[in-house]
Image 1 (cartoon, rainbow, N blue to C red):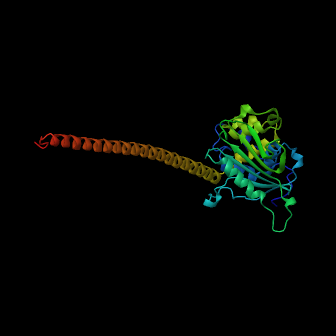
Image 2 (image 1 turned 180 degrees about the vertical axis):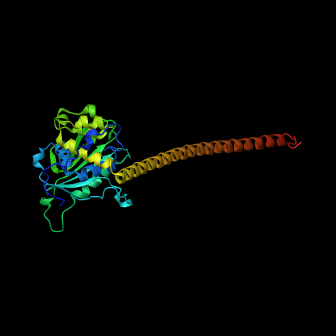
Length: 303
């Protein structure tokens, strides 16, 4: 069952211990991230407990609400690569790996969060609305003037910072800001999970996971996923799709800039033409004045 208690590790497969060299597809690939933690609730439990500052023992069950079949190509409707989870039947979490900055994360994440928050059935009491968490692992700095490794955004009073509700939470973890990890981030191991996601070799991956059974379990699952040709195929398709999208966006941006430059050039030429027209009109007026002056003095201006 999807919401069975999360009490034991995933089945042991120690073959990963002999893996060496570069990792084919790591967990910064959003599809690999989704598959690893969808298929391994034990590792997911460890990750969630770290991010939410919980004891793993407090997580009794996890139900994944948007499972996909590993190795099956992603359809257009599966553009969201988040993992949507109900925890202990009373909290909803959306976890997503997002490397590319599309310039809209704060609005996109808020939109996702609002959809899950507004989940009451008709007739339910508003007091029964479940706490929701949107957890984004970002490969970029969300706000360039305010870099932070791990940040929690909630609804608060602007004057005195009084909390409006703790049921509406946006968590942002910036993979490129490890050096800004706080003592609390380190105590709960969030920085180690980030190191795990960013590892490029099996040696590095196993070293980071050493001594942490949840991370070791995640490494096992990633090894099994990397051994699955169909999963690797879809993960590579996903990377190619994102590269193609990034190229299209760069091309559009370049053409937009080029169009703006041409528009400025056209505007400049129009101003120049208008100026020349004014100058021509002024010269015509001057010629007419001089012609009249000559005619007034009895001089034929045409000869």
